[in-house]
Length: 99
Image 1 (cartoon, rainbow, N blue to C red):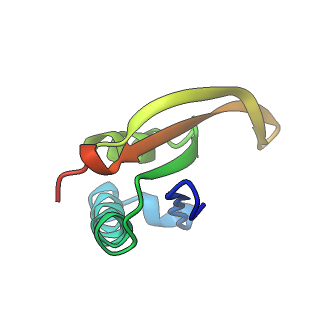
Image 2: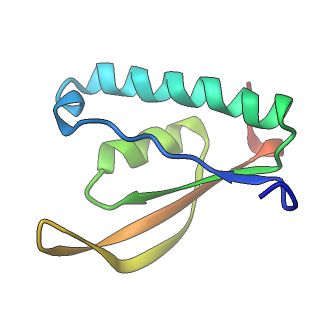
């Protein structure tokens, strides 16, 4: 949203890539390290946000290590493999981000 200076980001990977958690963490941190400076310094956005499902605990922990704050939970909002799961909304504000 250019008007609000916000953007949603996604990081999708094949499940098989998450088996090696250090490689996955490095890839995800690399993605965040590329997208955040672009969003905040080049595009002058005020906020990034993302939605992640509860079954992606490692993904959630990486977001939070990077500085994203859990802002809310959409309870049982998705069905994955026949199970109703929560999704988490995380956000990162420009003034919270450290390069």
